[in-house]
Amino acid sequence: MEAERRGLLIILSSPSGAGKSTLARALMEWDNSLRFSISATTRAPRPGEVDGVDYHFVDEATFKDMVNDGEMLEHAHVFGNFYGSPSAPVRAAIETGRDVLFDVDWQGAQQIANSVLRDHVLSIFVLPPSIRELRRRLETRGQDSDEVIAKRMEKSWDEISHWDGYDYVLVNDDLTTTFERLKTIITAERLRRAQQPGLMNFVRHLQSEFQEVEG
Image 1: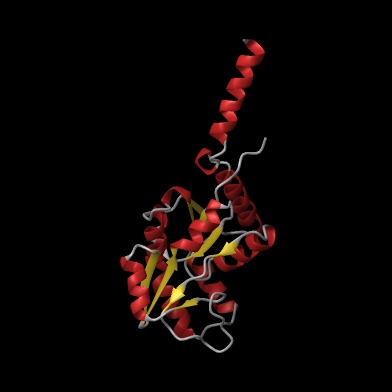
Image 2: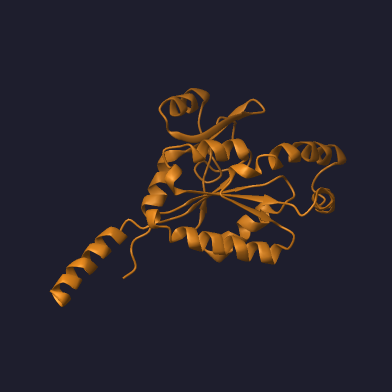
């Protein structure tokens, strides 16, 4: 008998360039039931963005009410706008056995880990094999100017310094190996006793059956 399973809140964090986004995309391909948490934001939609798909677009008063009412798992103020992760859709997902991915920094991870859903949190930090390699990856992907790369590098050590606040830490020196380890972690965590609420009834059934057979 396969007991029912609760979903996980899977947090992936890393300094920019360590491979977090690539690993997240690979996870979505590996298990198409995985979904990213859709953040709420007070910023205006950009061309092509759809409410409820890219973000939940709300005004500042609504956002603050959600925070005050405990409806945000984490939130932050970034460049003049508020961003946060509403708890209701995440709670609905995990109760039906669906895992939710979070791409957040260490501060967001800490807030989620201390939230009402903390028992279902799986946090993973991805480290680069070296700082030189981190810079090389940022430079070779060709997405950022030298100025932006410099800012990302400045921020990277602050992010790395919080590595010990996570459940697991992976050094991404080889993408294939790191991805295999990531899948192993998630597979094992899905089998945690706390994630399988149906186990209690199953064991009771075994106990009743044992008494019938051996009684």
